[in-house]
Amino acid sequence: MTKIAENIAALSQEIRALERDSQRPEGCVTLLAVSKRHSSAMIREAAAAGQVHFGENYLQEAESKIAELADLALVWHFIGPIQSNKTRGIAALFDWVHSVDRLKIAQRLSEQRPQDAEPLNICVQVNVSDEASKSGVSDQEVALLCAQIDGLPKLRLRGLMAIPAAVQDYDEQRASFRQLAALYHSLRERHPGMDTLSMGMSNDFAAAIAEGSTMVRVGTAIFGARN
Ligand SMILES: *Cc1c(COP(=O)(O)O)cnc(C)c1O
Image (cartoon, rainbow, N blue to C red):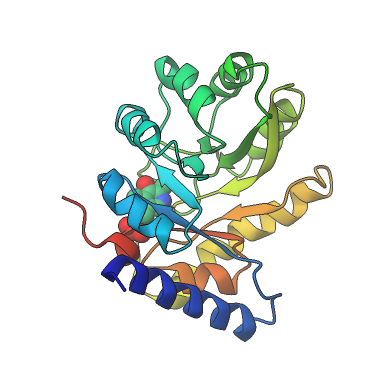
């Protein structure tokens, strides 16, 4: 077994144990492997270990890797900040986008999604607990943006994503994730198709799963430190 395969197997076991600990159904949390700044050879190794979902932050870097790995049936998630001039490429290459935080970007992704492709799966990024970051809508803005995305023909609203400020304290981690989960549950009354709460990274996925995460985005704990 390669190191990457070992990491994926250990993480999958840990995720199953955390699901059980919080009385959640087995398999309700999907592992998204964040492969930014790692080579396509490493992604291929992870895929050989059964990993299907991969997350990338930079369009240019992702373009070449997605092309090199076109022989594999992988699901690609865009999770980085989005500039307007990158929407066409993102809409063409990715299956999911987790980092939508303004209407203009959502409109462009819908318009530029190829006609023969399935609607693009969208999570709205919310700025919880991280005052310093410019990414993400506020709690107050999220309902409006979700309603607007619902009206766009080539997008499918799937849920919410957040990157809370990095803290080590488990209870503090849980408090931020609980805030996002509460927003998600209130929005689901109007948007019953929402099924995804994208929260938790290498350092805080246990707290995220305890608060209801359905997708953890893990890079370092699978691939090691980034260069
Ligand atoms: C890089 C990144 C991750 C993965 O972070 P790790 O700490 O390496 O697990 C998750 N989500 C987003 C949005 C990222 O940019």
